[in-house]
Structure formats: structure tokens, C-alpha cells
Image 1: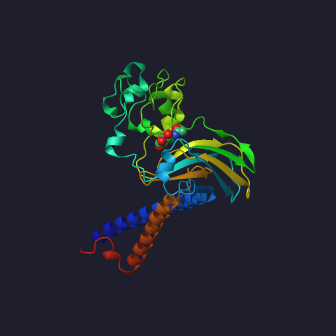
Image 2 (image 1 turned 135 degrees about the vertical axis):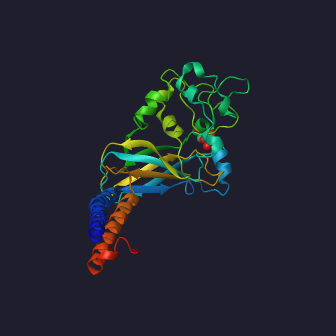
Image 3 (image 1 turned 90 degrees about the vertical axis):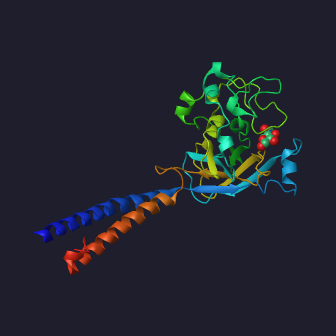
Length: 301
Ligand SMILES: *[C@@H]1O[C@H](CO)[C@@H](O)[C@H](O)[C@H]1NC(C)=O
């Protein structure tokens, strides 16, 4: 009697391991192959785009020409839509003081423009007028720009719908307009067009969804035509943003997409590892079972 129950329990454990294995291994393989299909180009440009030794001085000088041309050869056919991201390294957007330096009420409601308490030192102008959008996050808005051409022909970069629809609808007001923004002595980043409501300022909305990790990518725009293998891709960069003073980095990323999102082998490998381990354990149990059925689940009976 006792022996029977043990054996049945053992069987169900083995079946569970097998089942997980049989489900996870194909998911892992599918994820890996989707990730392998994705074509991704990463071009770090912050160092190459400033040839002088005093990089901080160069970037802070408003008179220097910040134009920088990068040429890349496309290794494989890239199917549209091709996403363009900027990638910043060693930028602590998750720093406690930084991440709290914003006013969500102000971003959403016209009447809340004066709620700048959490935004210091970017809350109010020198003469006390509220800055909209206030705070360090908005103030440090990324301001490099990219124009793209393929085989010397200009290609349109669509910057519409780069932000989450829910952010546009619920977090940024359609009747809230920028004011007093980036007017101080120290310019932190991009300026905003004051005739466009915050709900339509998609670069800002993307930027304000702060990244949890110090190296992050943010969507810049999309190219809606295919690019062929061996095409010459030229990107003219306005290299404005100052990552030099804190030792950060900047890279341009072009990537095709699939159901798995961007290029990412980790998900596939994780599924394969877990699935493979389960099948391995199931096999081990089966073998042990055949040798000594009694000791499989309860070695200390
Ligand atoms: C871009 O941002 C930097 C700070 O990162 C600032 O010094 C510069 O003036 C800004 N340039 C433009 C053109 O917005």
C-alpha cells in the first residue's frame, strides 16, 4: 500500500517536469529564432563625434559645430518598421533625487502649473514664475537629433506615436503648454515648442518615462521603408547632448522588430535552460526509479 502512493507521487512529479520541459523548450527555441531574425545596428558616436581633447568644453560651447556624420553598411535586409533608438550609458535616471524631480499634477492639469514643490532647482524662474514642465527630468531632455539617408537619398523618420498612448491620454494634458522652460542660465537639454501641448510632445513623454537601469534605450522614431543588404546608411547627428561631463556614452541604434520586441537572447536562453533542466530531471528520476523505485521521492523512509 505505502509503496503504491509513493510511486504514484513520483510519477506525477516526473510528468510535471516533462510537461514544463515540453512547453518551455519550444518557447525558448521560438524566442531565440525570433531574436536571431532581428537586425540590429548599434553605433556609439559620442567619442568619435568630438575629436578635441576637451570634450566638455566643446559640447558646452554654443559656437562649435556639433554636426557629425556616421556611415554604416547594413549587414542584412532590414524590414520596416525599423526603430531608431538613442542609447545612453551610465546615466542614472533612477537616481532618487532626479526621479522625484517632477510634478505629475502639473504635467496633467492646466490649473496645477504652480505645483512645483518637488521640482527644485528647476521649479520656478528667478522671478518666481512656474516652469512648465518643471523638474530635473524634463530639464535634462535629450537633444541630439538624427537625419537619415540611405544610399545618399533622404529617408523620412516618423516621430509620431513613439510614446505610449496611455501616457499621452492620461498623464500629459492636452491643454497644458510649456512655459518658462529652458530659460535659465544653464540649459539642460532640448527646448520645447510652446504652441504644442504636452500631450503631443512625444519626445518629452518618452523621456519622462524614466529608465530603471543606467544604460537605456529610448525610441526616437521609425523608418517605414525597408533597407536592403549592403545599403549605405548615413546618419547626420547633431551631437548636442552633454554626456561628457558625467562620463556617460551615447549610441544610435537601428533595429527591426518582431513579436519578441527587440534583439534579446536572454528570454530564449532562460526558457531553454529551465525547460532543459526539467527534462533532464525527469530523465534522472525515471532512471533512478527503474533502479530503486522506493528511494526516489523519499530517500529517508
Ligand atoms: C543640448 O543640451 C545641452 C546639455 O546637455 C546644452 O548644453 C545645449 O545647449 C543643448 N543644445 C541645444 C541645441 O538644445
